[in-house]
Image (cartoon, rainbow, N blue to C red; front, side, top):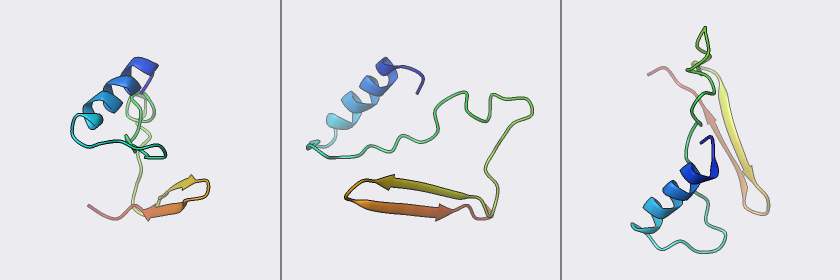
Length: 67
């Protein structure tokens, strides 16, 4: 997500489906232009680890597996 308008669009879309409450987290995935747009592409591969931490909530760790 490159700008606030894209974030606002995602929040609007999600809030039309479920009721959002203070503290809710929307994990949107990789923003455009991060890895695929580069030359050469920089993509996650099996064995890479993706980790997200939310203060006072915890940490989610996912290891990329062979698809």
